[in-house]
Length: 317
Image 1 (cartoon, one colour):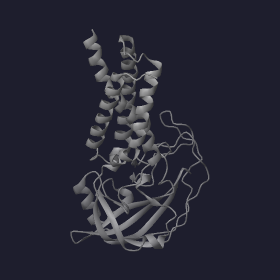
Image 2 (cartoon, rainbow, N blue to C red; image 1 turned 90 degrees about the vertical axis):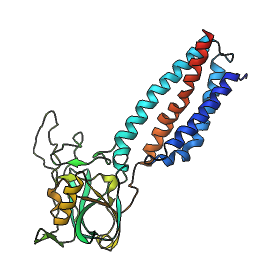
Image 3 (cartoon, one colour; image 1 turned 60 degrees about the horizontal axis):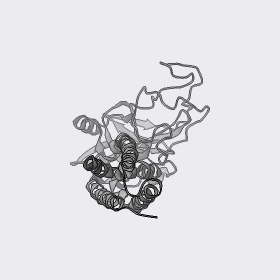
Image 4 (cartoon, rainbow, N blue to C red; image 1 turned 180 degrees about the vertical axis):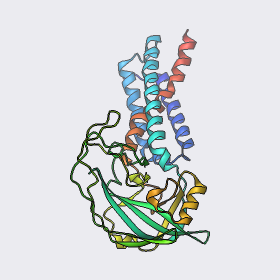
């Protein structure tokens, strides 16, 4: 099998550009993982070179260069659209949120609901100190915290009150888990979080702008935290209530979130709150991320030798 000089040069330029681009992306969330898969890029680059050397003219005549440019142009369009959309729409918004660490965070209450039979979700009321002020934060537990990005409710999205979701296949007759009662202070009064076991799915038919019958909106709280940011649902309440380190993001309007947290408003009724996580970085679908790296990002890198092929074509003309 004859190997053309142009093929070797283009592969070398692609490898160098891949290293430079990957290195430049290190500051973005999750992008340090790219180096873990980089050997796959090298393998794909070699296979790409072998395929072109076998299928196309190794002498790189005009027809061969046009064919390479066309194929790699499609790689570029497909790769940049898929990778940018998947990364910046799904992963980046949640993973790029900045959190401040605090010690001695403690769960003081818990409310649990089964959401349309698709997710067992708990609101966790977390006490922490911010600049010597006692604050109330909002964490969560979910049995879907390790879901893949295609599962509903989408584990990477904040869901607001009134939003319809999981309408394609709502499940019936799923009840929530019992939770331990715990007293929590809300705005100069004591409120007790009682045991609850409620079926959140309502069997009566409702429709809303094309929504199928039986689909209900989320109304457990003003905002549902993404499942990826939640604790494992199997963690015991006793373990959660132990003092531990936590990470806080003042969600959306920072000043309003701080004010609500300081006032210890009921977390079910506010849109701006202290969003608390007990682990950082937040969980994400590692398999899904590796797929878009391998099948979108690496073809995108390989397509960069399109510039080289176009220059050669211009010279030949």
